[in-house]
Structure formats: C-alpha cells, structure tokens
Amino acid sequence: MKIVVIGGTGLIGSKVVAILRQGGHEAVAASLRSGVNIISGEGLKEAMTGAETVVDLANSPSFEDKAVLEFFEVAGRNVLAAEAAAGVRHHVALSIVGTDRTPENGYFRAKVAQEKLIEASGIAYTIVRATQFMEFLGAIAASSVQGNTLRVSPGLFQPIAAEDVARFVADVALEPPRNGIVEIAGPDRAPFDEIVARYLKATGDGRAVVRDPEARYFGGLVEQHSLVPLGEARLGRISLDEWLRQARTKA
Image (cartoon, rainbow, N blue to C red; front, side, top):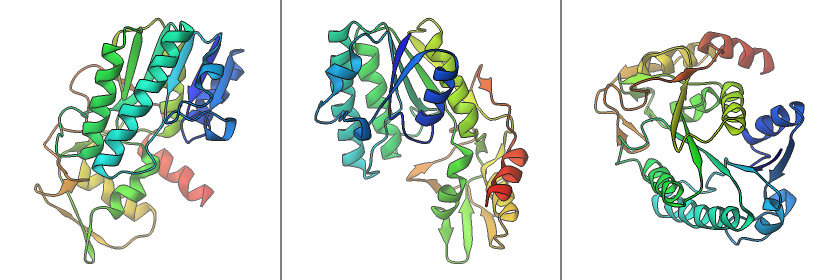
C-alpha cells in the first residue's frame, strides 16, 4: 500500500515512515526536502498519485495565533483537494487531546479549524488526538518560568512518548477509517505541576515548581480535565520514568 506521510521527516513523521516501511508498505516522506510544499501546493499532485492513505503530520513553523491558523487552513485545503483529485481513501491527521476544550489557546483553535476542514472534506478520515509529547516537556517547563520559579496548573496531565505516538499513528493508517476521533495518551496521569517537577528533578534543574490554578498553558487556562482524555484512549507503553531514564542516557 502506498501511504503518503506529510511531514514525514519530522519527529513523529520519520518514525511513522520507518514503521510503515518495515511493514512492507510504500511510505513516502512528503516534505519540503522532497519537493512537496503544502502551502503553495507544489509537488502535492505528484506525491498523491497512487496513494491509498495520507497521514498529515505537518506543523506550523510559527506559533503566533494568526499565522498558525492560516497555516492549518491553507495547508489543510491544499492537501485535502489533492487527495480528492487522487482518489485517496483514508486521511489520517494528528491533533491534540482537549483541543476543543481550551479556546484561549491559539494553537488549539487552529487545530480545531483543521479538524473541521477534514470532517467537511468528504474523504474518509481518522483524527488521532494525542496528549502532549514527553519530548516537549523542556519547552513546556520553559514557558512556565516566572522569575526563579515555575508556575504550573494542578490540572491533570498525561504526556506520551513520540515513539508511542508514531506507533499508534502507523496502526491507525492501516486500519479502516473511523470517520471520527481516536485518542492516545501516555500511561501515567498526574497533576501537571507534579509532572513538571519530576522532569526538573530528573534533569538536575533545582528551580521550584509552584502549584497555581490560574497558571496558563500557552495562553489557555487548564481545568482539571482540559488536557487528558475524557473517555476511552489507547495508552502508550513508555512510562514517564522510563522516558526520563532514556533521555538522561542520550544526554
């Protein structure tokens, strides 16, 4: 089966491509490196020829509210139009758990817009909503710094390793379309501030984490269940402690 992976050279995409190729599939890593530009549309027609499934893992180069919304809307329309013309049977997209529950977060709003385009496209689809990646814990911690402390919400948090994300996405790409949402998360659920504190301790960062119910997550207020699955979810195999041990070994 030919499967086109948009963003196939990125953190998740490169892993998805490798998994699919190991399974004997023709996985095409579509990115700027391979001459595919989802904003201009260049190379999309050629990449889609003969594809049965497309996995969209593209991410905006800018996280500014207006820019990220424009990226996902323009890219979404271009990719979906190329799929329709090529007769693609299954569109898989990676989104975020709780993206529709934190409207103050501009990135989350842009992902909602992307999801709506997919749902209205007429192409059979599956949206994979993931919790935050363990690989982004450093950036998440940095966004919480105020002076010499980090102010973090006590709302629940359930990060997932990129390796598990890629495995789930590859699985979904080979399954029949859901025309709905599959949620994935890490195996460990705990208050956000506690997980950030565990990350800092593991990385030798002595700064204190202050539990603050008013603390924002990239502009969005985090309620108790804003960032975790509310119902059934596929859980990853890699625990936070295991991931932290691996990260220290690689450092």
